[in-house]
Image (cartoon, rainbow, N blue to C red; front, side, top):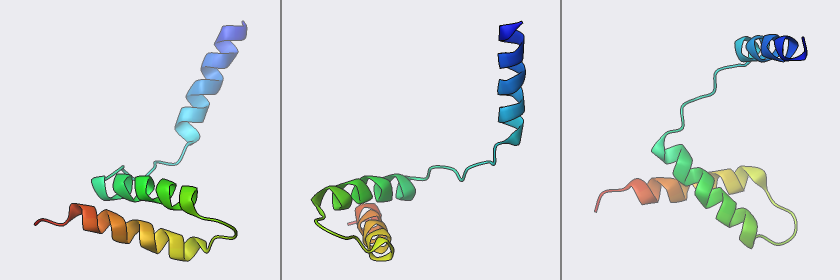
Amino acid sequence: MKWKNLETEARNFRKSTVKDKPLTTRRFFAGQALAGLIARSKGSINMVELRREAYELADFMLEKD
């Protein structure tokens, strides 16, 4: 009985979740850059500025030479 309830719960959860945006190369690089930016930061963080900087770094990594 316990497993049947768990299986039903898992199916319902899977149906109810919102589809996430696909993980593009740009978003992956931005996430990696964001992790580094947060690790080096000290004190309070301006999240808008941090996101902008992370995407700038991602775009830089994607530039062709």
